[in-house]
Length: 156
Image: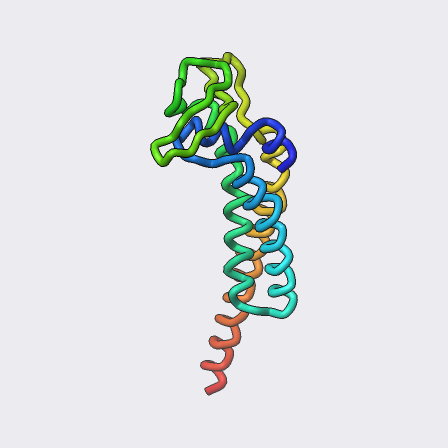
């Protein structure tokens, strides 16, 4: 989160997709709401609350697997001033003004980088490992259940 914040992830996304995402909004979502949600999910998993399992899968897939998009973003042409490598300011259609929108488009900057790309792999490792372990355990449980049903039908 620190790398994304310091390198302007939210303003870069605003420039890339012509959306109004401010640094304030970024902090609210990823520095405050996200950690609270992760903590509540962990507590819910401990107490075996089903909804916590749903949230855990959302966490494993979202911040886990989907982080690879950081490696695609430098290849996408920004919706706002794509050929201008410098930071720009923009007044969006909904009236929101955001300054210092960075451009990470490789064809404009000559550098293959997007905000948060250097550390994007870090949440991918536990996210993909958790998915692997859960699917493996599910497969084992299904085989065990199938064997129990097969043995039961032989006994009857």
